[in-house]
Image (cartoon, rainbow, N blue to C red):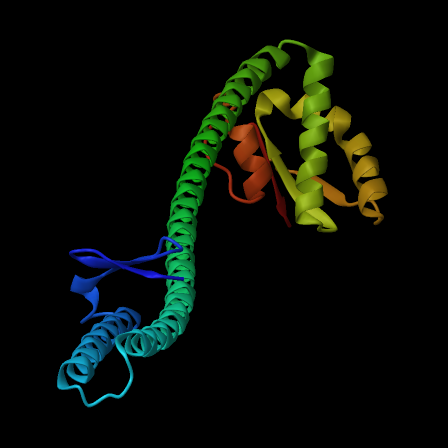
Length: 261
């Protein structure tokens, strides 16, 4: 490897360019600049020594021998300088590769961190969108359920108004209501109160209702007493559902009422 001097940098035969302006900053470049200065100092010293030997006449060697000696010294100095420059060049290339690798790894880490951050943002956005859609679907489902319940109530009310016109169907409904009341009360003796207009229908289904209740509850036949203190009440079909839930106490307008005696 040979050093080529340029106005602002040192260039090796391998193409490595070492700027002189950076010699004060980087350690490798600083060593290269120092080696260059030492080389040129030695070269000037050799030139001065050779000139002094020739001019003083103290040397007994002729000019040819002096020239050979000087050339030998110059070759030795150049060889030492080349070896030193080669070491500096190898060290510079190694440090350059290390720093390049560190920069590449640093940029890779930064890119990975940016990607992870953006991926987290995307995941959070997806979760928010999914939660929003799920809540909207639940609201629609609840609204649909409410609509179906309201529609069923309206249909049931209309059906109850129609069922009173059919005696057989009406007695079947009364029987089911009596059985439901007995199952909810689970008492051996109850008092049944109904409309005066429905007393005949209730009495006709009372025995069948007792047997059905005894089979379902696995108990003896209950004692059911129809309240004799009946008053005329206006028909209130909607009150049937309330009577099944309440079991006791009768409001005006109810079709019938069962309570424990």
